Length: 368
Length: 84
Ligand code: SF4
Image (tube, rainbow over all chains, first blue to last red; front, side, top):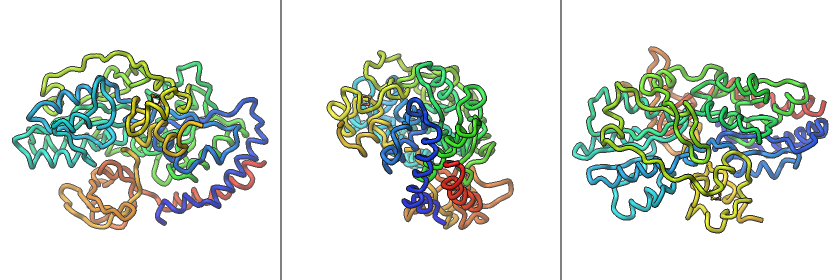
C-alpha cells in the first residue's frame, strides 16, 4: 500500500458519489446541506479533485478558516518585516508566508529590496542556518496550527539543549478548537455537518473535536485528505443524519487516534502556553486561540529578544473575513480574479494553495 | 504549507538526534522521528514504516490494518448504509 492511489480510485469515488446521491434523495433536505471543512488541506483536495462538481447541488461545502497563512493578521506580518529589515537578522519562514500582504508590503517584496529573507522547509533548517552563521541572528517566523507547533517546540528544545544563542522564534501558532468554537458562535452559520481536520488530529487526537457534536449538536467526522477520504467522510455525515445520530466519528483511523500524539503534545506543552488571545485575520480576537513561548524559553522569543511589539494595524476592509467565516463564496468577492489573483494577492486567502480563494481560482478559473 | 504527506522511512541519519530519511513520493527528505518514537525505541526500529510528515517532522505512523479497514468500509457505505 502507498496510502495515496488507493484513496484516489476514480471508480470507487463514482460509486461513493452514487451512494451519496441516494442518501440525499432519502434525506430530502429543504435547503442544500451545508458541510464545513475547517482545514485548508481539505479545501485544497475538494478543489483539486473537483469534488464539489461531482456532488449534487443539495450539498454545499462551506470553506472554513483552517489555512494558517490566511489567518495571519497584518500586524504580525508587519512585525516579521520589521525584524527582517534589521541588518543582523536572517528571517526564515515557510514559503507561503512570504507573499502574505502586510500593511504596506510583504516579506517577498522586501527580500527583493535586499532584506535577508529565506524560505525553509522545516524549523530545523532555520536552526541549522543559525549554527552555520553564528554572527547573524536567525529568526524563525513560526506559523501554523497544531501540526507545525510540535516542530517549533522540538526545534526550540534542541536550540536550548545546544545553547544556540543566535536563534529565536516569532511565534504565531494558533489552535483549532478555539477557532471552531468562535465560528460556531456565529448565528448566521447553519451547518449540517463538520469535517474536522485530520492532520491536526494526529496531534491533538480526534476526541478534541467531540465538543462539536456534544455542545453544538452538529455531526462531525475527522477526515483524511485524499478524495475518497473526503467523500467517505461526507457519506458518514449523511448516514449520521439518516440514522438520527449526532456524534464524533473518525474516518482517518489509519493516522489518527482518539487521544493524539502524546510525545508531540508534551513538547508543545513544555515550550508553549496558551496566550490570552490573538487576532486572526478576518475573525478578530479569539480568546485562548494561540500559543506563546513560556517564560523559561523567553530567550528564544524574538519579540522579547529584539524588544519589538506589534502595533495594531487598521481593520481589514476587504471581504476576506466573510469568506473565511463561510458567509461569502470566493467568486462573489468583487476583487476575485480581477485585482486579487494568486500572483498579486490582495487578501491572504489568495496566497496559499490551502486558501479558499486561491484554491477556487486555481481549479475553477476566473469567475463565471 | 502544512499539508501533511505520507512517506516511508528508508534510512537512519542520526540516532542521537532522531533523524531519518523518508521517501515522500520519490523525494527523499531528512525528517525528525522525535514525535513517533515510543519510549526506548530507536530510529532503526522504524525502518520501512510509513509516517505522515509535516514540516520536517513525522507526526504519526500509518496503520496498515486501519487503512485496509477504511477501504473495506467504503464498500459497505456504497451498499446498504446510504440507500437504505
Ligand atoms: S478574492 Fe482576494 S480580496 Fe476577495 S475575499 Fe478572496 S482573498 Fe479576499
